[in-house]
Length: 177
Image 1 (tube, rainbow, N blue to C red):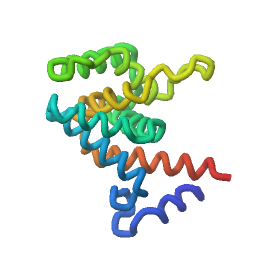
Image 2: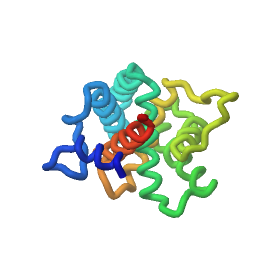
Image 3: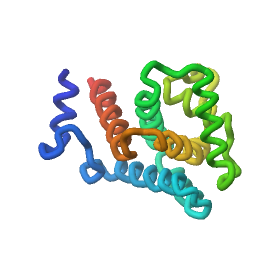
Image 4: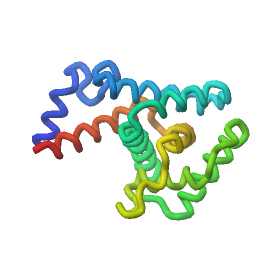
């Protein structure tokens, strides 16, 4: 409970249950802006803008950007699959995402999309195996997955970004001694 009170103090009173990008520290705001731009380029299927926005996203601290994008994917999955995902759900989601992007972004890789879903669900390889994805893979594919999931979401991207940043703030505050 103390962590929630701390997070509530970080949020402006006029917006008690939301976190706007204006109130984020500069590095976090840069991640939010780059992620939103990449997702919007993916939603528009803009083959010219998307690589530029992916490069912008990839230039940010990869562990932070990956955590935020993973949080957005997790929030979308929890919204759309409240009872959990089956292997068939993951397969159908990956196929839908890849097919939707392949016509304008031929570099899309199904295995990367599946690993992003697994990572968002907390299914990570052991420490001995290392991370299976490079930062460039995450930057190039996470916005595609987010854009795909947003097509059936009841909430806009900003809501899911807010959820991701709030969740990360609570985790970081709970890890602080």
